[in-house]
Amino acid sequence: KKRIVLHGVRRAGAITVNSRAAHDACIDYGAGPEKIHVIRYPGVDLARFRRSPKEEARSRLRTGSQRIVLCPRGLGGFLNSDVIVEAAARVVAACPETLFLFLSGNGGEEEREKHARRASELGIDVHCRFEGQVPWESMPLYYSASDVMVSVSQNDSLPNCMLEAMACGVPVILGDIPPIREWVADGVNGLLVPPRDPAALAEAILRVFGDPDGSTDRFVERNLATVRREFDARRNAAVIKELVRAHAGH
Image (tube, rainbow, N blue to C red; front, top):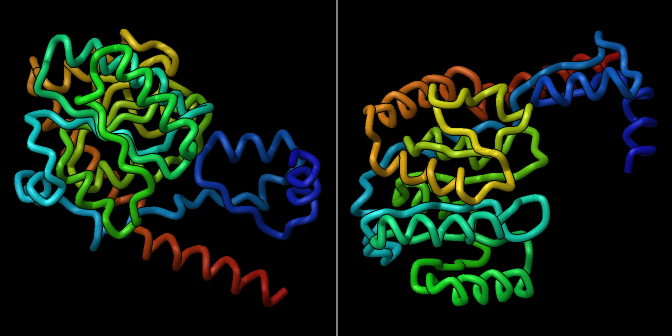
């Protein structure tokens, strides 16, 4: 894969990246800076992903829980979903009316069974729901039903689940890695935790639930403004189309 990337960045007439970290990686791979265009793609369909009534969404999903933690990235590997299950036990001990809602397009049945088995060992199986793969068109419903979105991947660029959650007015907790720090400042518009630290993750979730300083509403408003300014999918797609047209004419 690295050889393909090296070949591509050296031969391409233009390169699009969606983060400063990816921009710097292209420079390290030998691409000229004049070739690299930072465009925040794919962005968010703001007509589809928007704030909606929480109770209506929960009724349609039949959750019935007072608190819902959405884990939309999938299961296994660098996504650190095992850390979320461990953190869930701590959260449930402090806040029993909590449901962790895992969407698992990545990971497959083997990972789902492993995670479900661990949840059972921890005595929180009724607090963890594994939905499997959910159609993209249904995702706004899941965001709208949730109190917080969690993604503690240790390897990322610009996760669309983060942007979609922001667009739906859902607070975010993410792994503390450089690409994420481009958009989330801890305690300013979200919370960052070490990707492999269940205790820190549990503490962050409970902080959002308790909202001791009223910061959650500030997180939401700041992120809504950022998404509208930087991540409108239609506007960003138009920029990419124009770039393609310009280079196709060479």
